[in-house]
Length: 284
Image (cartoon, rainbow, N blue to C red; front, side, top):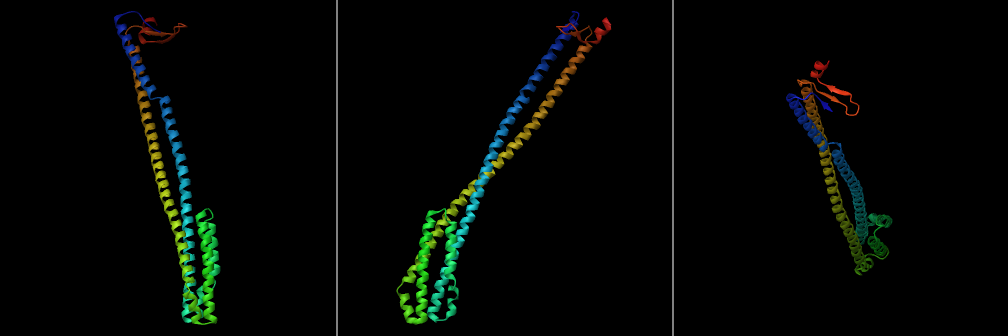
C-alpha cells in the first residue's frame, strides 16, 4: 500500500508510478506470451515431429536394406542361370566338335558337365524357393536338360562305336536341337522373370531412398527451426527482462526522488516495506 501526505506534486509522482506500473504489467504480459508455456508447446510439437520422422527413417532404412538384399539375391540367380547356359553350350560344342572330327579332346568340356549342371540347378532351386513360378520353370528346365545330356551321350556313343554316319543319323532326327532350343527358352524365361523382379525392386529401392532423403531433409529443417526458435526466444526473454529491470529501476528512482514523504506499508500487518528519502529526512 502506497502512502504519503496529500499534495499536487506527490499526485504527479503517484501518477508517474502508476504509469510505470502499467508499463511493467505490459512488459510482463509480453514475457508471458512468449514464455515457457508457449515454448513448451512448440517444443512438444517439434519433438513429436522428430519422433515421427525418426520412425519413418527407421522403417524406410529397413525396407531399403531389404530391397537391396533382394536385388543382390536376384543378381545371384541371374548369375547361376548364365552359368547353366554356359555349361549347356559346352555340352553342345563338345558334341559338335567330336561328331565332326572324332577327336576325343573335343569332349573335355563335356566331362563333368552333368555334375556341374546338377549343382547349378540345385542352387537355382534353393535361391528361388520362395517363387512358385521359378520353381515350376526350374523343374521343367531340369527335366529338359537331363534329356538333352542323354541325347548328347547317344550321339557321342554312336560316333565312337559306329562311326560318323550313325551319329549323323541321330543328329538329323532333330531331337537334340529341339531339346537345346527348349533349354534356351526355359533359361530365357527364367532370366526374364528375374529381370522383372530386379526392375521392380530397383524402382522400390529408389522410392525408399528418396523417402529417406526427404525425411532426413525435413528432420534437419526442424532441427534448424528448433535452434533458431531457441535463440530467438532467448533474445526475447533477455530483452524483456532488461526492459523490466529498467522500468523497475526508473520507478525506484522516481520513488526515491519524490520531494514529499512516500512509503509502502503491508495492508495486513501495517509494517513499512519501503520509504523514500524524503520520509527519512522528514520523520527521521
